Amino acid sequence: MKLRPLFACTLLLLALVNHASATTYKLPAKSGDSVVASNSGEFASITVDQDQTLLDVAKRFNLGQTEIVTLNPKLDRWLVKKGTVVRLPNRRILPDSPREGITLNIAEYRMYYYPANQPGIVKSFAHGIGRQDWKTPLGKTTIIKKVKDPAWHPPESIRREHAANGDPLPVVVPPGPNNPLGAYALYLNLPGDYRIHGTDVAKIYGIGMQITHGCVRMYPEDIQALYNSVPIGTSVYIVKQPIKVGWLNNILYIEAHPDLEGEEKTQDQRYALALALIQKANRGELPEFDQLALNKSLKDLDGTPTPLYERLFPLKEEIPSTQPTSLPTPIVKIPKPVPAPAAKKLKSGAVTTLKKSTPTKPATKSQPRKQTSATTINHSKKMPITASKSKKEATIKRQIKPKEMKK
Image (cartoon, rainbow, N blue to C red; front, top):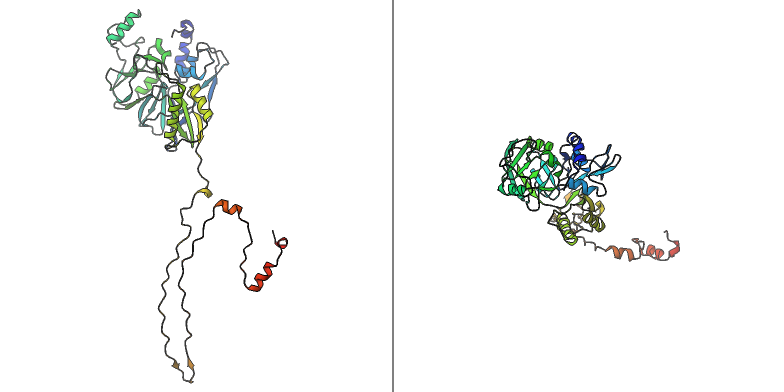
């Protein structure tokens, strides 16, 4: 993609100065939640105070070119006039990967770094990835080497490619502003000399695009911060998740990104993938979600987390009791009758005898009440229940007319 050199170079210094490094998010407090946000609103936006490119705005807020263009499809990436409102991302769904070390989700051109010495936060960086014919490899690896001011030894295949395009490369590109590795490089434990590195000034707008020969390219300020933070041996997970789902406060969100070049999916394929992820996130069950919201998310593919479903818990009175409906009657042991003592003669000649004690009746188990369904209760005729004390009282009650009864 060709740049408009004069206009781009005029605003380049502004972009280099006004750059926000990694976006830092607090990890969700609730276990199982995976949606993070920079503020409490659904969306974020700015109003530009001077004419500039959309890519300058992207660099200022640590976004890549694909992300900022996708969020603002009606704006000219090469000229955003003063007073224009530019939409920015706010919420993000964390990739489905361990929350340790570094995760590179190449499908969204985004890095997630979980600093070991700063628990409870995640830092997110924009980055570029390999082209269609030079794909960035997937899998788990580690950082095995860190080099400041690296020299670049381009492979013979890359030198032939540049020579064919009229841009021959030397055998060794020394450190400096024209070195495509930039000032810092983190070497990955992968065959092929793959790195996470910076960039030279000419390729700074390639962040957030498929533009490298397989390496991961970052803004100069971001790679410097990462270089100074991660130790050798840090785990690196390289994943490709164009569609992500995650919970936040019992609400299920979906986030969909455009397909990489050469890996385009049909709408039916995206829908099937989304359903599988929703079902997995909901413990294997497919809930009654907002299908219109899902269709819009899979159509727009702008990377905005969209709410699909709210998980409601039963009310307190609806929770079934764990206590049994009827408790068993305890067994009461009946004591053996005590024989009456013989009559005792008193001095006055009167005889006193003990009263015969009434034996205690054994406790009987109460019959459990038969449960009545809600339907039976609703349709049964309600009658006042009165325990009659005598036949006379029962006769009087039967003579009471219905209209005389209290309602």
